[in-house]
Image 1: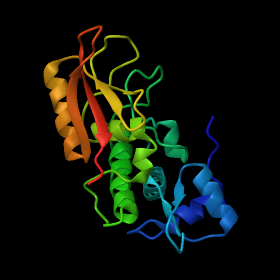
Image 2 (image 1 turned 30 degrees about the vertical axis):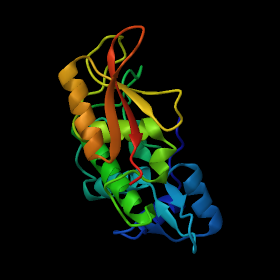
Image 3 (image 1 turned 180 degrees about the horizontal axis):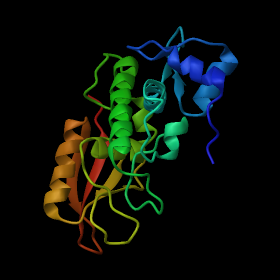
Image 4 (image 1 turned 30 degrees about the horizontal axis):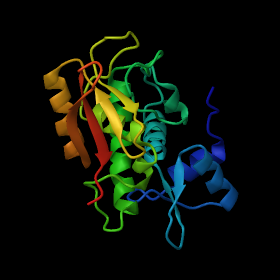
Length: 217
């Protein structure tokens, strides 16, 4: 079970720069946020710390909870309490709750991802994946699909929706979909999100799938 944020961690996240997500705190405090996936240390000097997409989402959820204290809240995924956000890759045995709350979480995570691209890509580009996405391929591709409104598959085998899976290639993921139109729509979404994507056929099953990798230029 994910541990909730401490009061000090909540204050650090709340005090992050609204535009860039830059954090200020002690080295121990910042390292703790990095370990929880809420922050990252910039690779270039002065090695400042910034909120990750999960950190941006946690801050938005925190601000919303403070702004609407008297209203009954909708069912939330565990990530809404400050845990690590997970995009739906399809086929999860216990997927996060759907509805308006999930839509807000996904939208916030995607905006945080775009900000992460702007802050870490050398040319501040937001139209291609950043280093974090290249080391979290399945989650990054799934976030792009979910943020664009694609429906992930349920836990039952054969249930409609996309499924994002690892491949033997270290820089690519496979996306499976129930039909050709859905598969093509996934290709279009990934290409628009900065990925190189193409359709291929599995040799044994003859099923079509998408192979996608982060675009570098």
